[in-house]
Every structure is written in structure tokens, then in C-alpha cells.
Image (cartoon, rainbow, N blue to C red; front, side, top):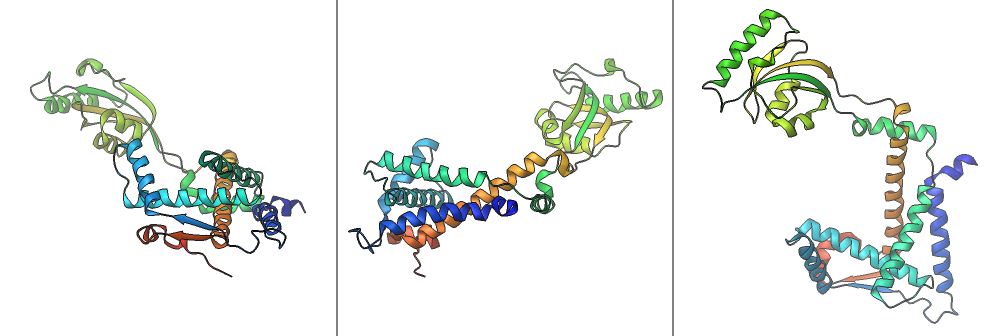
Length: 293
């Protein structure tokens, strides 16, 4: 029984049973609206209104895919609002209907959020999505900077300095060989993204390809030339499940919520008669087709 109670599908079916049970009651013969299929219209005017609102916010018109998403969201909102009204929460005000739709969405999401994966489900999800939880490679390194603005030939000077450092040994350090730069001369536990944001993507790729424990270069950045000594490199890896259990569980729940909500919306699309203008049908696609089972 504990396992059954944890099943997300059971939670979804319970919510669905309550909502659709209430709807069935609303359609009894005693109800004057019984057996009358509710209709939801999606017009070209609705599409233009959505596009205009988007353009006002983002200072550009939406792409075709973005407009398709806007219309899909609008249809879902109308379905949820209509369902809320079918459950007796009727109000003709647009803002109130939107709040009703949001409240019904919250009820569905909150119910699904209470579902907990079994150990087997969590392990399967972790194994199937391991790359999603992969940690970035990290590097620690020191560098000596050679400015092309202050030197006639920064690359040549860097190459000569490298010979001196190699002769002195791998641990040699002589900052006076280079020039000042408003960036730390030693960086620790950096990702490729963080190195890229400071020195540029070409420098970051080159540094992550260097061997550790010896001076190398010159390596060019957006600033100029650098000699680099990598002191530590941590390869990208997937932490064990025991270390990221909360994160994996949260991702599992998020996906189950999305699946359950889409199943619920698919049932609503069957239940209501969605009528779209010709120029909107291509954007809505199958979402606007009502099927009678």
C-alpha cells in the first residue's frame, strides 16, 4: 500500500477523479446545460493580441515557434478556466478566470509534488539522465602575463621567459618576468566557462588541454600572451546518487508533474470543443482537435 500511495499516477488519477466526477455531476439531466458540449474559440484576433503583448514586452515580434507556444499556453489557460467554471467557480471577469485557471494548475502541481519516487525509480532515473547531473571539469593554474601594448614582441618575450622558468624547474615562479594585469595571477577550481568569461574561449580551451605541473605557452588571451602552469585538474564526473539525491528527486518530481499535467490537459482537450480560425489551426496543430472516444 505504501508503494501505491507513492505512485504519481495514483495521485494524478485521484485528482482527475475528483475533477471529472464533479464535471459529470454538472452534466446530469437536472442540469440545464447537461449534454451540451462546451466550446472554446481561439481566433486570429486572440493570436494577434498575444503577439502584440509579446512584442510590447520583448521589443520584437515573436517567432513562429514562440507564437505557437503562446497560443498553446493561452488554450491551456482557457481549458483550465473553463474547467474551474464547470466545477461551480463561474465568473465572467477575465482576470478572475485566469486566477481560477492558475488555482486549478496549483492544485494539480501540488498534488503531484507530494508523490515520492521509490528507490528503484530514483535509481533508474539517475542512470537514464546521468549526463544531466554531470559536474563540470575544474582547473587551478598560475599565469604570467605579457602585454602587447607594453612590448615590441610579447610572444617572443614570453618564449624567452619560458626557457628561464623551465631551466629553474617546474615550481619556479618569477612574476617580474611579466607585466601587471588586473586579474589574479593564480586561479583555483575554475570551470571552463569561468575561465572563458575572464580570458576568452580560445584561452580557456587551450588551458584545459595543457599538461599539469609544468610551465607552458605562450597562450593567447584577449589581453595578450600568457605563460601558464596548471597545478590541478579535476575531470568532469557524475557524482554518486547518494551525494545528489535531493537534486535527482527534485528533477524526477518536476518531470512527473509535467507529464501528469499534460495528460490532464489532453483529457480536457478531448472534453471541450476547441474551435480555431483557419490561420490559427496550423499553429495549434493537434492541440485544437477534439476527439470523441
